[in-house]
Image (cartoon, rainbow, N blue to C red; front, side, top):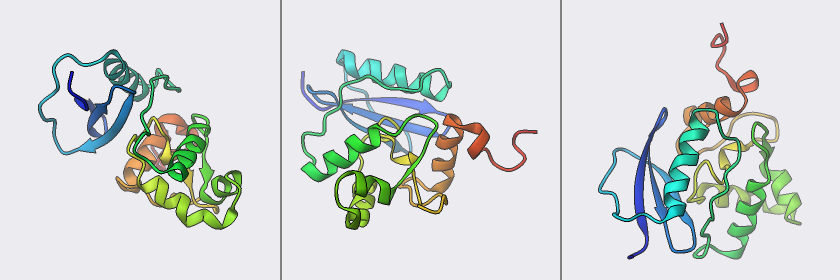
Length: 164
């Protein structure tokens, strides 16, 4: 099998491409439309697609597919590992993550690692907000960030009036 392989998933917020290496999932990214899928997908790619579908159906709050961060810097890997520790339905902020990594002055570097996260949703960079509680910075825009947070915590992140 030639890697990376790819498959596509349609979700309520749009299409995603899921790419996998022999090590695990290497990319989950929004795309405008699906392309050609790889034949003979490995089990972890099929499982990733299933788990993401369950996430959008509000039937899954954690993911357990292997991830491939092999081509990332050590710092990015540390940030992404910290993101994986943010529980479903909760948020953190850039300075808290920088502090957790041992240097509160690396707030901007944490933000840069967030922006370069190749595995959207599973590595939950959407759960990182500004220190004052405002939604801030998301590669796919704040509307998508709010929708993802609303899936996880509708009481805190639903749009005004959407509960009635």
